[in-house]
Image (tube, rainbow, N blue to C red; front, side):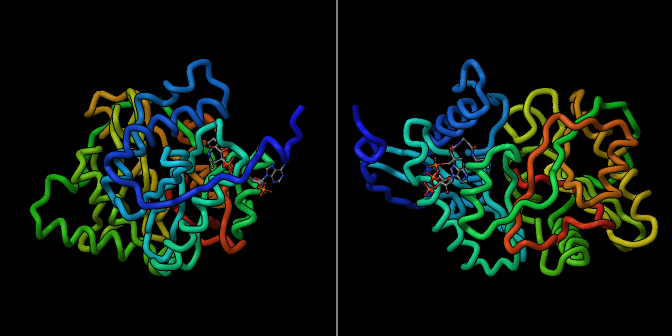
Length: 321
Ligand SMILES: CC(C)(COP(=O)(O)OP(=O)(O)OC[C@H]1O[C@@H](n2cnc3c(N)ncnc32)[C@H](O)[C@@H]1OP(=O)(O)O)[C@@H](O)C(=O)NCCC(=O)NCCS
């Protein structure tokens, strides 16, 4: 009988940026890894209607890493640059290589990317019930804080009145990007999610909705719509939404959710999905009042152990998946 130390020889792991030739295998590993961990009957088909790997790589190829063992793809990780804030995931490793330090091999260079980008704080979303996941990320300075709920509701058709980013001319689009940047900066200094708006436009993943109040932007939502996006079948997924802080933010949040539902209806999608950190207590409560129910929840882990923008009074939707 072999002892654990005999059966686990040290692997020769190399980490490099992901290339387009890796995408199919990276997606297969992504599905098998999550499908195996969650315990679905056919892991290879896990979330087959949703896309993360191709879309994130196209959005920022330099932010995607793969790990190889003997020239064979063993895992991957994606980092996201939101200005002064960064997060990573999905991080996945082939199940036959679990517990062989491949995730840690990917996380070191991921932390280097955050350092290169100069992010002030970083985060991730993970399984709150898994000691392995929490322990692994703690090694890299991330600490569990509030839960993040991934919620959904059925869509009721509503009339839309927001401006569609994709319908604007180039000059107006530049103005809209600056306004979005200014809005998120007022929530958390240096916060900038315009890369998501650009990715949705350039890859036709959905739409960005802009809610103007006179000259200033009151709120915006970056939505993925349908299959082959992060939303999946019959779903409009609010990848990111934010409301200008201050009096009336709750009302603008409600109007923004109306607009998201109207977009879903317009696209023939029956389900609206969005994530909210429970530290954003008013936003979470408003989602519940509106009829959203939690489909599943995970824990937000932060580096350093401080709230960043997951705090009361902040009307932001996102989940760092
Ligand atoms: C989660 C996942 C990426 C980890 O990859 P991995 O290559 O197996 O992880 P590593 O071997 O690098 O690290 C395992 C570490 O977990 C930690 N860990 C494991 N069990 C633990 C426990 N009970 N308590 C505390 N820490 C624990 C240890 O720090 C361990 O490292 P060590 O052996 O050096 O002490 C992989 O299991 C996977 O693909 N899972 C399915 C998809 C997924 O869940 N992705 C992450 C979503 S956030």
